[in-house]
Length: 146
Image: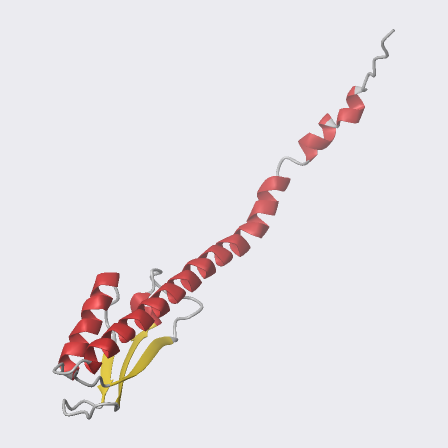
């Protein structure tokens, strides 16, 4: 013999469902701004990290080219700007120190680059890092000819 459980209609709560029809809309209105702020923050942080990594790689390439015998500072700057153009970064300022081409073998050469985050942000108006300037530098020693 089977026992059947009957749930009365009052226990289901049809009356309670009718009273709470706008609750989901109100809850979403409270939570939506926080979710949108989190989403925009993740986009902005992700872009900042991506640009910082691209700047670091670009200055390493530029410093490597600057250390080779016979290359000038202009060659290094062109290499950095070419790398950054390939990654979609525009408006970066590149500097090489020392600027002269008669650097002695073993002397350090520093290549640095900086770009305002406002110039590279994917958002039209960056919220968190609007006034931040991203920069990177690499120092390598001039190679000796073999």
